[in-house]
Image (tube, rainbow, N blue to C red; front, side):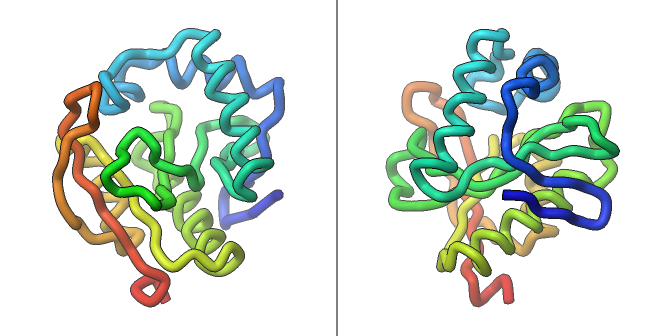
Length: 173
C-alpha cells in the first residue's frame, strides 16, 4: 500500500526502518506525551514495528511509514485504540514525526491522507484521535483535519489525562 501527497510518500513498513524509528522513539521530546512519556529502546521499537506490520495483515489498515525525499521521518495512519477501552469499538488516526521535521506540516499532510484512506477506501464512518491534554501540537493537527473535541478522560494503567477528538465521514466530506 502506497500513498503519495504533495511532499510525502506514505508506504508500508520495512525491516530496515528499525534504526530510524528507534532514533525517533528515543527522543524524549517526541515521546513526551505518549503514554507515560518514556522513551522506547530498540527492543521496544522493534516490537512496535512488528505490531504495525501485523496490523495491515489483521485489519487491512495500519500506520504508514512517512518518507520525505527518500528518508523515513515518522508515521501516520490508523489503529485500534485498545489502550482506551471506553471508546471501543473505534479506529484512531494518529501520527509521530521526528522532531527535526516538526512545524513543517508533515503530520497534518500525512494524517489528512490517512483520513481520506479511512473514509474513502475503507468506508469507515467515524475516526477518533486521542492526545494528552497538554499536547497542543497534536490539538492543532486535529483541528486542521476537522476533528472536534468530544470529551476528556484518563488512560487506565497510566493515569494519563487525554482528550478524545472525532470526525465522521459526513463531517470530513
